[in-house]
Length: 385
Ligand code: GLA
Image (cartoon, rainbow, N blue to C red; front, side, top):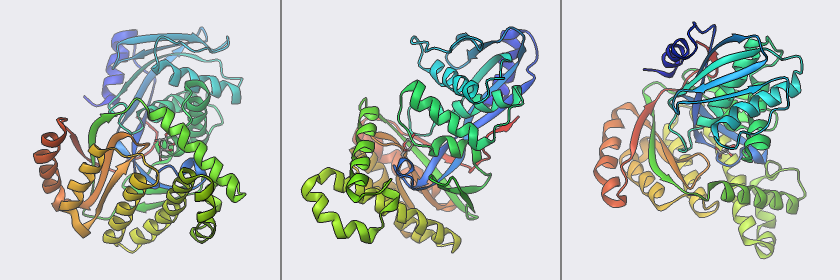
């Protein structure tokens, strides 16, 4: 059963009444533009047909009573008292954090509710299950309290919850695409101005996701280190963020930075070139040039592997297998924060079975891990359901 139906059904079962408000927010896959969001740069993700549903109804004691269906756990907290961490269960941080920061913007919000949450975004795989939860909860509160918050505001509140309540120092891409995604479109987001540009997924092109099921414990630490290295590089160039450094400017001072801090120089090279690749990818898509898009995706992967150093041998192998079949008809790269997770591949629909087969025949044989393979649809961002 889909999360939307499951959340409604379980709401009736757990709370003995019918839900009055039903919200759904998708996860995402990023086609190109990795680790550029917190450098004020460009990204080009799409929302996917996997997401998180929240079904609920008002209650009149200023309390949120939340049932996480997939974990079979409850968490209750009051809106008229300071919202604290519930250290026993991590998932509660996403809900409590969003409600806390909604209250900070909209102190008039006191309406309690019973809620059921159900989702089908694979967890810890780089497809933004947490952002979809944050955005779904944020939209639920906005609707419940008729609050003057746009979907962009809700996304930024989700990011704040993640940064300041959950303690993950992420950028704004995941929440923005979950809030603003458009059916059948990729969305180029300028993570500084928050302007977006939707480009249709070309007819006959499939977006494939392969989950490596590799997950490293280091993710948060490594992610934060990368952020710090990027900030150090921006400081070296005397700019607010690496977004402000062109490839030409980078080249002029590359040797000097390398002598000072070799790692920061490599991280900066990734970010500066990746920003340009996103802009080039938009042009390629507008010209219907999937071969060029694929070439840029390949360069992005190489840059994540060699300069940003966030891939793993398993991920590199998946990309290599997909690229073998796809050739110049599209492309493949790691997607998401890194150190495991998923790859994304873009290719003509008729290539899908061949990609699935080469991976099924080889990945587990070499790594001992069985992958998951999805063909996804670019989907609508958060909506009532
Ligand atoms: C994670 C973060 C995002 C972004 C990506 C890398 O998904 O949550 O903000 O930084 O990694 O592109």
